[in-house]
Length: 100
Image (cartoon, rainbow, N blue to C red; front, side):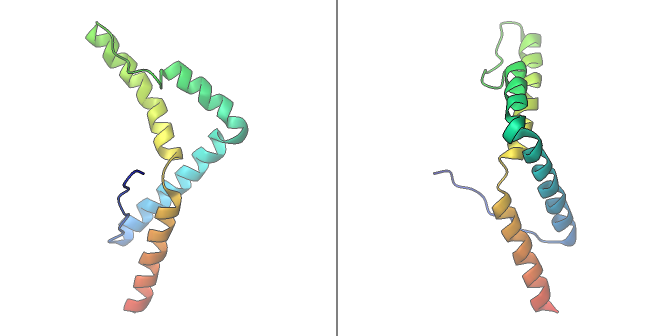
């Protein structure tokens, strides 16, 4: 089991950023889950998601790693721990209520 970091919201700005990330994560999930999974598979294939991108030519390696980073970015957003983020938001709002 992977050890995940806890999300801590220290300010209203943190809260706004987290809410924006949750919204973005939801949009990506709607786009790439269900029927969108076929599109995601095409992106993974094009980007070489399951490859390391290594080539003898360092410029080709850099290019392939850049392509792969697109699929990694999409997966990072889709796989974000939404439940943990929502709990952190609730905890922040509860703390604000108790402080006045």
